[in-house]
Amino acid sequence: MRTLFLLRHAKSDWDDPNLPDFDRPLALRGRDAAIRMGVYWRQAGLHVDLVLSSPSMRTRQTLALMEGQTADR
Image (tube, rainbow, N blue to C red):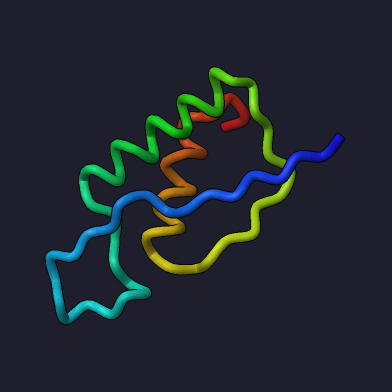
């Protein structure tokens, strides 16, 4: 059976009001959360075959930090 996971990016940074929304990076809290999500996925034995993602900075950072914690590195 196939499973669909829907995720939202981790907490983003609002420190620079002049930065376009698309380019907002993750806040420290968001980076920590993304790493913890990756650890959880690894410990739960979850495997991903396909990722469809926004190209926004915060989304790419979330995915990269999660991937860095998975067993399939």
